[in-house]
Image 1: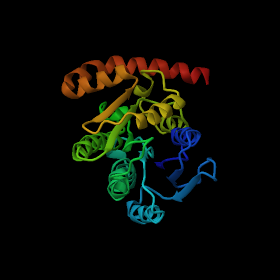
Image 2: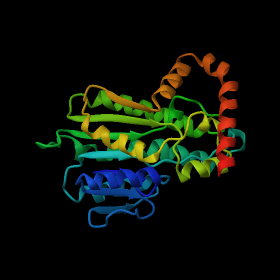
Image 3: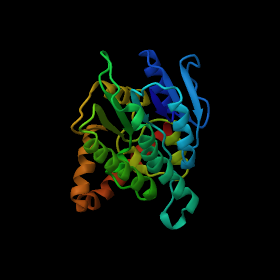
Length: 265
């Protein structure tokens, strides 16, 4: 089992859940995760430097064991209007949110193809995406673009893998109550994060792990959290005028809810 972003809030919870289900874990992340070292191999990697992915993959290949699942959980958002954004920040968000998962998937596919056993038939690739993939966010254009690209990659990959025993899934959480969200808001994140109540990270982690028992080789399974936000986001992608008309109301709701959160905090 290979998991990226294992030292983060959702990633750490995913890792603990996998270990509780007797999976052996390879955690790819910059800092050492707080996970059982007896069952977890940490490979240090900065996903913003995509040139490091080939050596990471070679290290995994040296174990000469099939990879049952690859879970992409690493993520990065650096809010800023495009006109004010630093080039390095834009490049880092695209590299970590899109380029790195594409390249890592490509490197590890040979280790996943054909793996199966009596208890866990077929392999699985799971992408932890974001509601931003279908809901454009002013002030986070690079992040939203990368996440939209990652969704297209997953859908295309699922088509390519139809002749194999590999499945592809994507989970699209809205705002999640983690330190990443708090940091995002402190740096000028959108109040649209608070149109709906931020999700419990444990529920998101469980939804990700649950994908592993849902093998569907003919399509990419997509789960939006909350589901109603996913329906609305996809409707806005089909009819952009709907988003334009509803944005004033959404911003009003988001500002009100965020003010309540700050008052309680």
